[in-house]
Image (tube, rainbow, N blue to C red; front, side, top):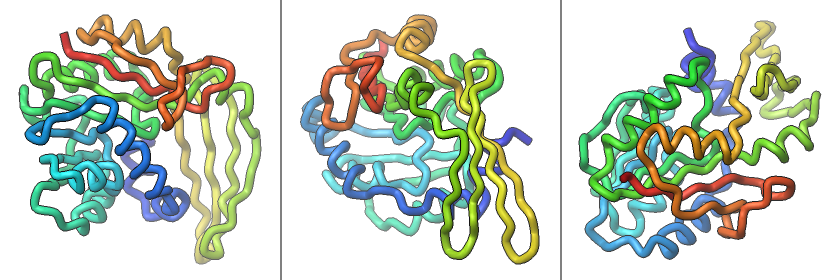
Length: 241
């Protein structure tokens, strides 16, 4: 089983990353919607939506919004958010969800780069294009690989709800490898995260193959200009062509 299928559906994943910043999600969505000036009838897809914090913000503005994620547990949690224009389903991003249906597809919070094979990344982007209407927008938010490498902490420990999560990180084959180990109720657990260190040039190459034209590149959630050495994020807005 790929690491992400096992780890993302584990209750310990949600425990370790459970305290997501909903205020940050609200501010990002407000910034993006204001920037793209989306008409009221546009339809949105949040790809790899997790528990739905970004999708809920979009739906709260009145847009028809779908969120999909590979983790059944995340979708169960997301479906606790009740809005008539908000829908969640379990889905693999490498497959088309609704052909030519959406005006905007979002992939936020580094929810990409998990696959071992580069072809799977292209497959996922091809599916994004298939989900979009002609000239639809794709908004992708990834970490800034250059800054991640420069500021990597090899070891850290987090105490959450009485559980000590011991986290070790290293770089291997242009990927960040994060090993997570902890003990709960006398049972020892080990999980692994592996995320590709894709930079701006990598995404330019991927988008060219999948049929996207890059329109804007930002370096944070305030939509400031991207700087490879200093920006926290790599946020790209592109158009299906």
